[in-house]
Image (tube, rainbow, N blue to C red; front, side):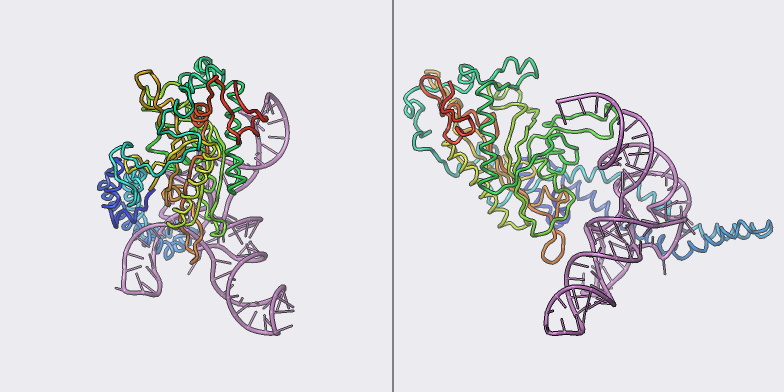
Length: 465
RNA sequence: GGUGGGGUGGCGGAGCGGUUGAACGCGCCGGUCUUGAAAACCGGUAUACCCUUCGGGGUAUCGCGGGUUCGAAUCCCGCCCCCACCGCCA
């Protein structure tokens, strides 16, 4: 959530920000509702102040009179009753007026809130402007000495590559048919070495970020309340991407939602808390199953392991002080962790600076890390894919957008409470990361070499198949 | 799933429907005393929003929402959460 005060002071900044992100939101309607609400509140508050004042003055009198009414004789009673009525007249009128204002505010509030939640965080000035993801900017690339994506796979390795889809079929690593029988399209079942490899990658990534980079290992619920989805900024805009467990239909008090990333649980941990400044920064890592409906992606990446409804992800999150320089430094560090991981896996990758149009509502800046996937990209005359980068990681910098929604604060130096900054980045997500691993490490005989850093997690195995 | 108990400030714990934003204790911060520390004593210790002539003023908040009332932490209803026991169970 953005700061409503800032919106009032500088609405243009937010209009431009939304425009740059290609997000529609009616800022003028929001401002109008806000000023209307504030006028109503001011009126209501002054009436309440008057009511409180009167209440203190005449309240005890009414109490006494009502007490004396019980003992009063029939002749005294009408006089006392009239006196009470007179005393009650003004506060009673105020009460009606306050209730009227209450109704008006209650009508405005949900509309105001809905709009406010939709206002995106403006992109940082140094984020390149763009119209679509085609305008994202490549920052740098890295390759192991044994592979250069500028040359063909054959030139690099001496044979034409199989796609991961062929590899997992031939090596019996995944059973798609039965997965679809059980759960429908975009599902998969890892079998045998496929499952071993998947678990190896997750465990390697988790150990790497926790043991070597000091992130605290955590588990998280993946079934959460709506507040948690709103608080982390995935709702209302991404509502149709989340699986919805309609428990209210069974008479329960609230529904639940399946999370699309461990970030939701990790960020939700400290919602509504005021942390001590010396507790910060919080560095958390979790491994969790992630669920995504992939609404709007029908027909896109339907084959293979690239786009699926359920996957597993090691996620890193940092909650730090509200300091831009510190926030930026963490962003770099978190990206560095992923680069180090990719280098340990010896997978070619590039860093992609996302342009304004590719940013979601909640981030000020986002860097994608893309792994080289030989099976993607253009297909040549011989039916051989040229390879292309595919997104494997995404590192977001959010300022206080998320913590403001989550009401996650710390006590600053002067004792004031301040909303924290937050950042998040993938460490490794399977099965997607398995695509470059399988395709890059495949051998001419159809086997796949196990990357060296994963062997310890595969019982020392050096190859599959 | 059943039955019962409970949610009050950083924590513990009071609170006949009317100066209760909330006694008291602990903790924390500042001060006095002390060579220093402890003890003792004194003072201060919530959050959010609105207005401001920047001195301050106002409103809301006792799990959350609604209701009764001139007035609700206190009464009524719904929800959420926690605890205990029983049943079921990975």
